[in-house]
Image 1 (tube, rainbow, N blue to C red):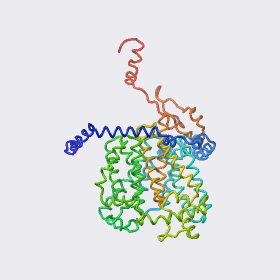
Image 2 (cartoon, one colour):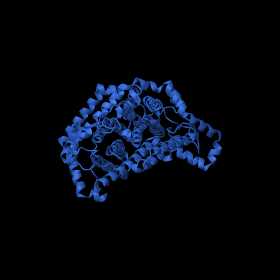
Image 3 (cartoon, rainbow, N blue to C red):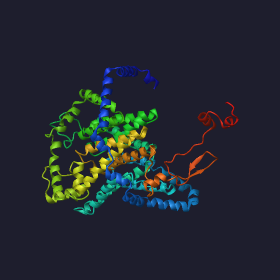
Image 4 (cartoon, helix red, strand yellow):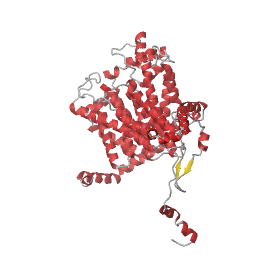
Length: 572
């Protein structure tokens, strides 16, 4: 670090930074950014979009929420009663105490397991692993719930719309056009549902959020470095992924250890914002440097995928993060992007220009897919063809709805695919879930601060980015990417929950309490080791702060006098 500070490059950086701080360009950009922030704060459209909806507000105090909470927390409460009845036996067992500690650290286990799970090459990947891993995490979570009464599954923070969407997904399998083709896909959706349930329930403080971001950052780093090495070694051009006539100078598209470059790009769009958030909120310099290096390689690998939808989605994510965290920097970011255009490789610029070129075969080939999807919606508007792309292909083949030359794999649009699988009701529930998730995340960061604010904003921005990508592709075609999508969805909800807990609002009551009961609930405490030292009793909430004993020096600094001096009236 000393060599870096004494280098000519660092001196040049300081000189440029000082010149910019004193320049008129900085004052103009900051003034324009402040004006944009003020306009956004006074916007009626944004105010209407950000306000709490009637259904989501009613969900907080609804009977349905209480019933679902009671059902989902029944196993944990039953295990807790068993523990209370045999507490001495369990506490005498070293194995039981180890299992309890592991269960209370489910977020730590999840971060390590996703590190292992999401770096497996596609050739060795099995879709059943996601279901097995998150089922194991669910069991591990209940081991922690056995000792802690308030360590229960949090259905309330998942929300009304995602629960409705899950219910419609479960109905789409038995009501499918060919049910035998849909059961496999129901398992994929159940893995994603378990991911949301475990992640939202296990993340209870900012440290848990950082651990989840660290796991995602590790996956971004491994996949990105692998992709950069792949580019150095050379990638063969695949005409199925590019129109060679319109992109004559474009090299082969990097796909890392995934099966498709678009899939790799979508993977980076979802997890790169979390890596950027970790770089911003890391307390140690080493962590900032490592996370920053991961972001550098991630952006480089994203450019090498030549995925146009991923580029646009990532740009939207970064823009929303800047607009939310530092709105005065938004004009500078836009100016920087404009200045960087001449320095882009010609292949990248050519690829960008083909976004609106309908003569590109990779774009024009999608219109027959859209037409077939719309024809299917007209035939089965309410229930769709059934869950999964297999039954959709069979339905389209039987009724001859597709007239394109290339084989029909999926609709190449996330929202059309959800609609033709689950019907208009399922598509409406999914869109409401995404909109509610993003709104909940950005509303939570308005009164938050520190690392929680940054991580929650990054997760919500990532959801917006992949939502935009979904208009040009179907990310859920690969079940592993589908689980990553819902993981990002869950991190947004978990971040919003932690923001609310840090602001003193507390989390939802975990065992079927109403909100009023939760607010009036007094945690149990028991004194230990003398007066002034308190630790939470068994069953006390994890979010309740522990009162630490004050030292004599701290009491002197706080009150100015010691107890003896106050009694005697003498000055210290």
